[in-house]
Image 1 (cartoon, rainbow, N blue to C red):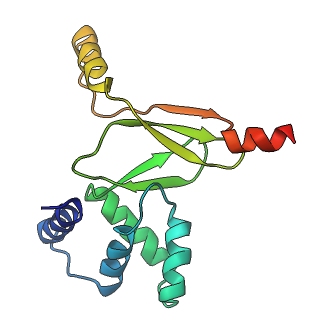
Image 2: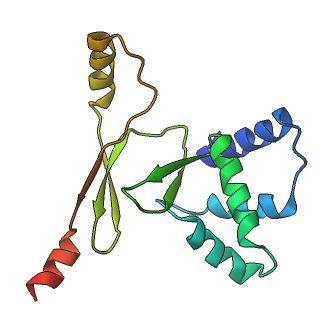
Length: 150
């Protein structure tokens, strides 16, 4: 089963568990987010979807995205004081951190293979069950630094 199929199965199971009927618009939004790689905002999704189906309202997109987060299909990130960014919660999800450019808003992911070991060590050291974490570095990306030099 590939990642997309697993996510579709998770979506179907969530709808059944919560007695949700299938919705043409929600399903359309769902199919659309499966085509996206990387991080995205609700506004970005809405702008793209509205070009295809101008009858879909922003409130519909907000409700669908909230449902996808609740269903653990999407992961929501808040980078500093910015709007929410979302990414698909893949089954082969690799723990990663984010580099966020304060000038252009670019987000770069980088893997943190040693994070599980650090997490387990801190759980033992402090007798604390960690259920989530964030690693975010803010600064200026290479492209913006190059522009500043000119």
